[in-house]
Every structure is written in C-alpha cells, then in structure tokens.
Image (cartoon, rainbow, N blue to C red; front, side):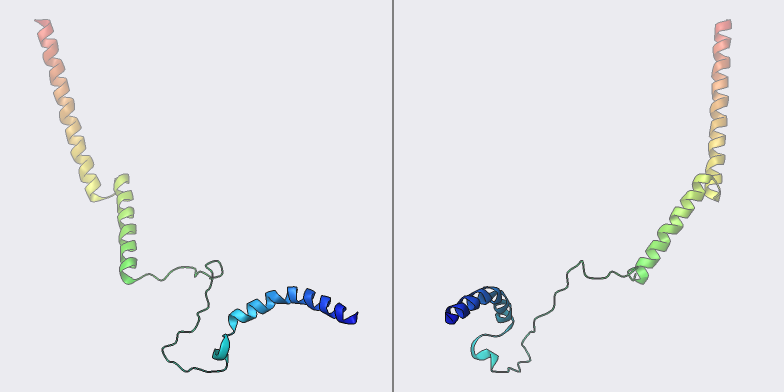
Length: 123
C-alpha cells in the first residue's frame, strides 16, 4: 500500500513539476549539445528583450545642432509675427501708414462722388 501511496504522490507531484520541467527544458540544450561547449565566434547569443513599458524614458531627447537652430528660427519667427501683429515692427508701421493713405484717398473719392451727385440732383 505504501507503494501505491508513493505512486499517487509522485503523479500529483509530476503534474505540478511538469510545468517547471518544461520551462527548464526550454532553457537547456537537448541531447549531446548540453555536454559540448562550442566556441563559435559567429554564434549569436540570445538577447534579453525589454518591454517598452519597462524602458525608462529620458526627460528630454538630445537634439542635433540643426534641430536646435530650426527650433530657434521658428521661435524667432513667431515672436516677430506677434510684434508685427501688434504694429511694433518697422514693416508693420509702414503697412499701417500705407493703409492710412489709402483710406484717405478712398474717403476723398467718396466725398467727391457725393458732391457730384448732389450737383447733378441740384440741376
């Protein structure tokens, strides 16, 4: 009876241990390969894969000189356009002066047309 008890206990243990032995057998080389050590310089070893979730990201990626210059150029352009919109640049002042002259000419032309219309109606 003890023999049967050991067999049953062994079967239960083998069911639990089979998972462990499968994992171990995957890591070990099968057959005579486990006994032979090979020194092949062309042999590639297994690389440890790291999941993307486990990789720590750096705070700021390193930018190249060209990328830094491009970012500076974009910032300078944005600052210039902001000042231009506020009318603080020389080009904006020239544009506003030209617009004022155009408005004045249009107002004079409208006044002339109105005067001609009144002169026609008066006749």
